[in-house]
Amino acid sequence: MLKLGIPSKGRLQQLTVDWFAERGITVARTGSDREYAGQVTGAENVELVMLSAGEIPKELTAGRIHLGVTGNDLIQEKIADWQQVVLDVEPMGFGHADLILAVPDGWVDVTTLDDLDAVAAQFRANHGFRLRIATKYHNLVRGYLSANGVADYQLVDSQGATEGTVKNLTAEVVADITSSGATLEANHLRILADGPILKSQATVFASRTADWTDTARAGLASLAEKTGWDVQPWK
Image 1 (cartoon, helix red, strand yellow):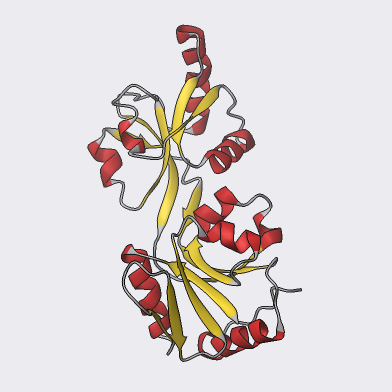
Image 2 (cartoon, rainbow, N blue to C red; image 1 turned 30 degrees about the vertical axis):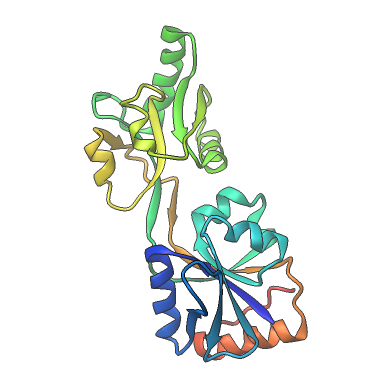
């Protein structure tokens, strides 16, 4: 059987269910909200697995699921050399969010990465430690700053309300996912003008490491009849 992993709760789950329904495929939990298995109708040889969006990259990497729905921000953050591990099958058109860098409104002279680089060097000279950037996207942020020549900083792990770290004096800058920017604005933070580190949305990914048996391939073919997918992850 082909194992299809979708988000187990929240708005992302409902939008995923709706997306498949629009293509004549019903995905539904078989029991209570506490159960993490389900069924698929409208496509043959497909088994539904309910997972958190954050778990799906790990399960795709391990090959325990064949297809998974999650944000491309999580895929690129959690999977090294992700293009060798998973195949980007189709963006789904929802769950849009940008990974951005934001600085305090009071930093009126800091509007670009070049400005941030200059401030970071001066910050260390003034304070004796590197400028702190709060984020949970360490790999993406580190790669982006390195590619743009920003070196004098340290990443501070934030798994909660990242926007509040500046007010709480545990960081000077934040790198976080935002859809509207309203929370950043409420915390008196301003996005740098260079544009986002990454534009993300919910996407269907296929595992290159899963065991693509004849039955699993048949399941993909059955889904493809409704979705128009033309992919062969096993190659």
